[in-house]
Image (cartoon, rainbow, N blue to C red; front, side):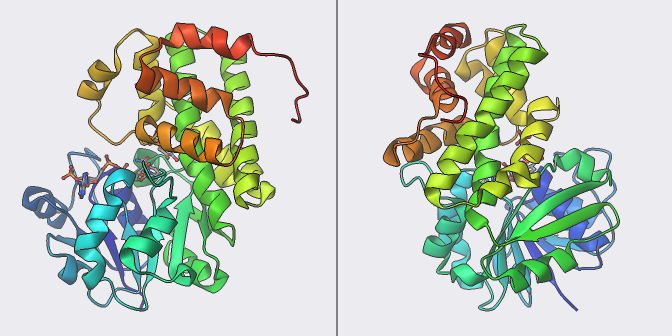
Length: 332
Ligand SMILES: NC(=O)C1=CN([C@@H]2O[C@H](COP(=O)(O)OP(=O)(O)OC[C@H]3O[C@@H](n4cnc5c(N)ncnc54)[C@H](OP(=O)(O)O)[C@@H]3O)[C@@H](O)[C@H]2O)C=CC1
Ligand SMILES: O=C(CO)COP(=O)(O)O
């Protein structure tokens, strides 16, 4: 029988543990807080998924070796910017043949590496067993067992298929892919675009404005992705436009909500103070912008989001910066 470990007891780590357990795969979770681990062992995670009863088949521990022992699949679900430091502590615990699955949607600050690259480098894992999961998967809806689809990507598609088989309860439909770069990039960039859409909403803009940001945001994602070697087809799929729509439209999105608060006039520090969960786009807008600059790719929306979040520009100011640019062909 396939066994899984999930490192991280936040909202998506816990919801994905439920996907695995409901799919018949027993799971041991690693959490850094004993109180959280005790709660999960008692059948719930009130901090992140209040009111949800977790399935049988999930247990938790604070010991990484115990969590990963005998696992065929090890799922990583911590904030992107802490992953490298976390792996330094966990690498010795990871089984040599297990698939290592990233649920994370960010790009590392400083190095501009995608999470699969950080896993390869800091965890010493061969790329052929590194898997990424990404799609329109708001954790709360998945934990409520609302039907959704996702993409599971690995350069060795047999490994992607193995993880998909283990992650297939009746309410979660994974599609496999070999395009690790595209699937990862779609997930990371949509968070930045959701910040922009949230800002537009906070400024009182309507659906034309938001649809324009979403669509041109997808153009930025595709341009950057293709330059990095992604398959353009990925961006019209679940990990591209699918996740972009879910995140930009949903009040459940932490990134969209972060942007909304900025658009309403709160400062970045004020929004950080009221944000309890991980809004990856806040840090990744900087690393994704760097990645785009390094590859000579034009990403005006991402640039303006970074200007608000990191350079103190106001959301209102950056609208002008976007709208008053020279006219050009849509396909460029
Ligand atoms: N939530 C969602 O709907 C989705 C999220 N994702 C992605 O999944 C990834 C994880 O997000 P999510 O679970 O939502 O995040 P949450 O903010 O809900 O949870 C973060 C988890 O990471 C732990 N953590 C925080 N800092 C550290 C650290 N320094 N070392 C070790 N563990 C740490 C937290 O522990 P503690 O509770 O002790 O602070 C918590 O268990 C992100 O990249 C996100 O973009 C992808 C799809 C859907
Ligand atoms: O990635 C997500 C949905 O697919 C969750 O988005 P947020 O991190 O903005 O909540």
